[in-house]
Length: 223
Image 1 (cartoon, helix red, strand yellow):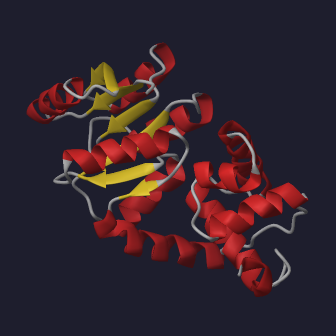
Image 2 (cartoon, helix red, strand yellow):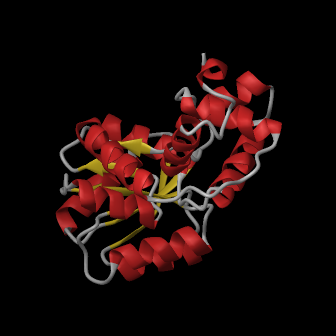
């Protein structure tokens, strides 16, 4: 089992100390850095390059801008928002900025650990208590946004079909007899082609294209 390097950034000293201690006790994680402000998020990504940064959204500085900088300049470092805010709009803003995980404070250690595991391999993770409203909000935004008319290769359509069925990268790789890193490459290509920011928006855009009959040749191919 490979060790996941993780950093925590939170401006509440007791919270920061406690969570670092808890994760240092877990064998599959290595806590490599900590910080207390939005500038620390960028500095850690640039200088230490952890697999995952877990960050609070309410800290000194412009946290959303820090997320955007890391997502654009250090894409190998994934981010999880660990926050007290259950606001749909806050969650959507964080996801659109570049986080792959959104976990509410008060969640269990197991849930936060699972979120870190999921985003480290490029998956998206939302706390169950907010996932329905966040997905609904993203779907509403997707409907109001014109999805570009693009051509997909056969393999890209295969990936999209499996994404619409809720498959993870690993399940897609197994179904298509590909390496998981190849599926990640296809995800990057699809994000660029569909002009979206993350995996959730890829699925929503694909669903919009499918419903309009522009993708996958209609519902029969999804059965």
